Image (cartoon, rainbow, N blue to C red; front, side, top):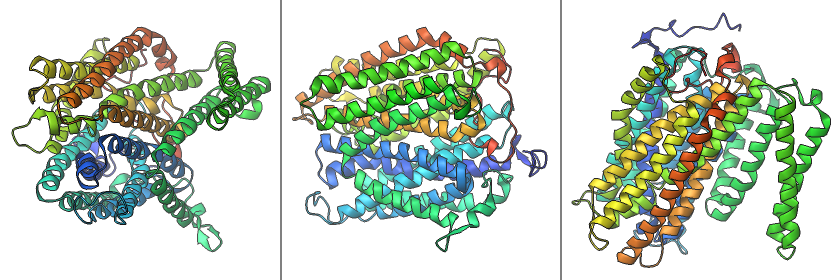
Length: 590
């Protein structure tokens, strides 16, 4: 079908000036977030109070789980781009998520512990289903929002504000209802309610198919029907998804493997994206690019990987295992600089800018994601809550988002109309500063009333407020920037890389949470350990945020907004197109 033959956003009617399909995606994602955040509010307490894991172990498990939730969109996005299309990938993910949430309701004997308890394997299976289901749904449903609009359509900012509101409405309701019911009446009831929410999301998305204007369909539907060994390609894709569930079932039980996966695969993913940016985009294909720099780049990768393997398995060769990856890293950096200087290309520079934003986001998520783990436990043990279940405080962030998202959207628009809108990297720097300040405010508040006195609940509201304003400077802006900067054929890959950075941040968050789980947690000394960790990471975050703001003009130049052009919405060319940078106009100013 030609780009001209595709239906536009008005052909099926509009609501509030937006395609009706936007609201199908809104409600489907709202119910998916209801289930995810409802389960997330309870998870750290379920690990520590039902399965009797230590705080440190629970923090690592929680971090590994949330990290894997953000890794799998790389696979889900790739399979949607190349084979399934976004819509089929979302449906498959929703089915897995529904099963996973219902399996969470099988809890076995209360407080039976995690040793020699066969029911725990059902728990690991439930987590694996949720992880893989999120991978197929998470990246692709946001991609479909972008497909409803041209790249410079002024409605895109409003569309993503509406979509983001749906996410947080579901998150707020899920945390409040599932958290309260789970802690008050039993874990199975809380997790079961989350499963009902996910089922509602699947029903909404399925019934609303006709309003999606044909977006998100596979680029070659006939290829899906091709059979291999008597089974269609489409069902082979689903079989791969089930196989991925088995892999995640193993990984979630062995969290160290998740750390190795993040370190190894994450670096290779970034290098792969950089290789495309340097040797394919400027020249049309790898074969047309310069051979020597490409060979040196590959050699640098091989040396780096070999050096890491030596460090892991041959620790007696310490100096050699340090020198080899340093030489490899040096080669990679030298090639990047050489290509940057010798050949200028706007698309390549935008990929470099996107990679900088992605790396910066890791710092933010490592601190922000304390909310579901160490901060949740801190609220339960050291805060004067007045008898309110600690898990329900997980809804504060989402409620703040609902209240403040329109304010920020209006603010960015107002500033943009006057040429005062901060650039994307400047907003990222502000976000990291605010997440650090949130922890410093909590530390100050807890210390000011006395370490042996329960912390006033107002400081929990304040830390979530600062974290929320930081999130509004980074998350919707980041979603918008990733595929605004990426060429259309790389949209889901770049979106997957963005989620992979979130995965790395979540695993780092688990390690920070583990550091707060020292012996004596629950008494004064344990509270001091938590506050010491929070104070340290808060100061580091403020310093990093200031540094990002200082170099933001350089990153802004790499974005080349003055040469950004619309792409055709034909087939997969539309995949992954996100809203513009939050609040900016479609003008070509830098």
